[in-house]
Length: 72
Image (cartoon, rainbow, N blue to C red):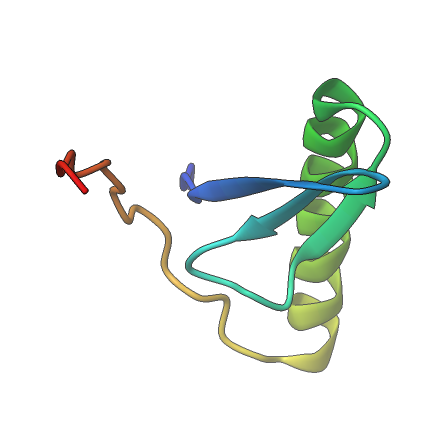
């Protein structure tokens, strides 16, 4: 079964931090955005495998984020 998760990337002093919105425990950091994406994908696969081994329920994905423009 294919599921999509929503990633949030934040610029930090050492590069980028990536985290899944629906599964905040899946988090990583890397120097570049490309590395961060790859590492987040790897972390997600590892977390799915760990949850399956422990018999835990995998959080549903599919959240949608959008930016809301506002004049400040």
